[in-house]
Amino acid sequence: MSRKNNLTERINKDNYPTPQYVIDLLLERIDLSKVNTFLEPCKGDGRILNSLPLTINKEWCEIRENKDYLTYEPQCKFDLIITNPPFSLSIEFLNKSLIEANTICYLQRLNWLGSGIRKEFWNLNIPDKLFVLSKRPQFKKELGLGSGTDATEYGWFIWDKLNIIEGNHIEVL
Image 1: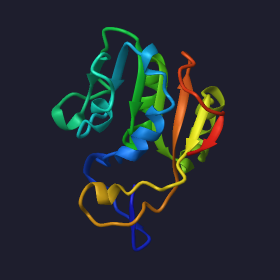
Image 2: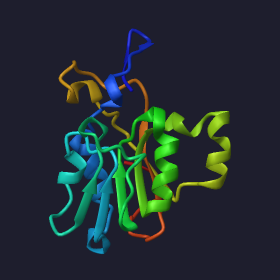
Image 3: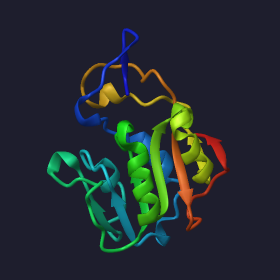
């Protein structure tokens, strides 16, 4: 989420396109040769989906295209889910993803870790890895709404049952 004048302004339907360099930093660490099936729960403009090789069987959801991930019923368990979910629905999305995929990568604000409401969730679902982004994403720039970095830090939160992602438990990219 971007900030302006210390007031939080939400963009309609949490549509924050993921900058390509953020996607590339993650994909560099994934052994995609072990990925046959992929799901992108929040396709947006397709940047994540289109960054994956054509040899991978890809599915997607996008609320703006009347394909809601929370009501979507997959036909298989996925090897990999990568997404930048709507912050307001992150826990709901992740609870579903943890059932539907073996490896899950969510782009989130680092303060997603904090909150009494999420404490129980974190105690039951500790990520295998956290890749902190040293360069803050410029979501407003991606939307053509200005420049400058976002006002908070982000990272890739990763649950990796397939062990296909290289890197330390916590790493700064």
